Image 1 (tube, rainbow, N blue to C red):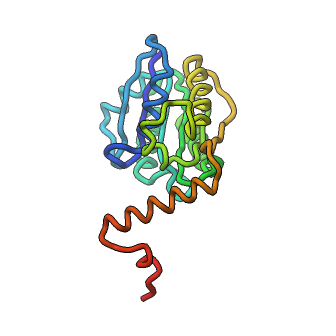
Image 2 (cartoon, rainbow, N blue to C red):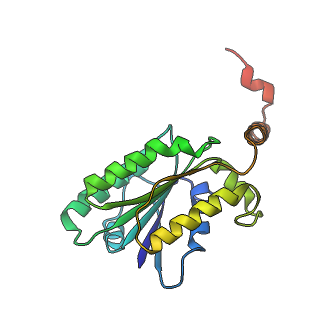
Image 3 (cartoon, one colour):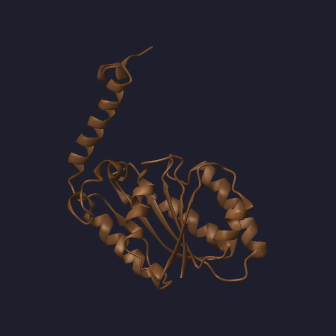
Length: 211
């Protein structure tokens, strides 16, 4: 089984998408051949598309941008769609991992539906999608073991998806939230904003300045 893992985050490093794909990789057996790609700009190299087109499975991971797919990634998808319609001579199954800053993973539903529609236009097969809430939290929890604490739901969902990928099975979408109360997630998010504000030489109350 040839599997292409595509990180659609514009971040160069330490993105939630990267974290999720690294976790997923641990769940694949050595019999799978894994190729990894980073789509950070709106322009793809033709050689990359050719390599991806030879895979049996494509797994996309990307952050939610205003309830949909990041703009640069949409441009890449259009290039892939055009190539696949003309040059693809075998079936490819697509799986998608959407992470968002919202607590509820269900917020990724529209983006997953967009990816499913893209599969139809590109004339390839839809496998399954996972909407992951609290995505921004994952990058800061590298020390927490997989499947433990707030990461338990994500781990369980990735386990299910990895089995479906390995067997090229299509299944229903899964939506998960962090394993901690929503109010605690909000407190943590607010603390993160305040920390960023201070690191930029401002104060929390500066957010409320009216001009």
